[in-house]
Image (tube, rainbow, N blue to C red; front, side, top):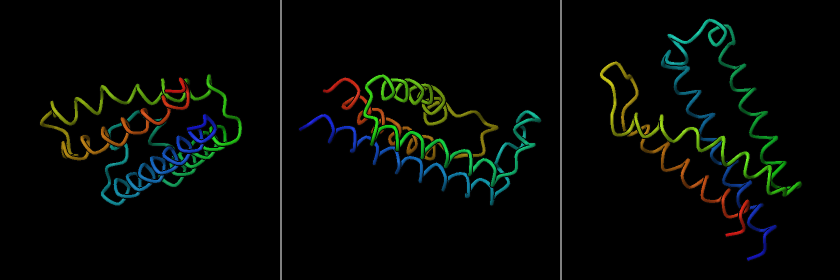
Length: 127
C-alpha cells in the first residue's frame, strides 16, 4: 500500500471521528451537559461556537493529511490525539459517581480514538 493512500485513509478516518465528536457536542448540548461546571471562559463560548471551532480543527487536519502528507504533521496529530486516552480509559473503566455520561460512552470513544491513532500511525511512520 502506498504512503499517499495511508495518508488519505487517515484523513478520512479523522473526518469520521470529527463527525462523531460534532454529534456528541449536539447530544450533550441538547441535554445541558456541555461544560456545565467548566471554567468561565469555556462557558462563555456558545455551543454553536464550539461546533464551529471543532469543524475548523477537523477541516485543517483533514486537509493537512490529505494534501500536505507531512509525517511530522501526522505525528503531531497522533500525539495530540493520544492525550485523550487517559481520560477515556478513566471514564470507561474507573467512572466516578458524579459522572453523568455512561462508561459505554467513554468506551466507545476510546475504541474510535484508538482506531484513529492506528490510522495516523500507519501514515506517520509508514507501518
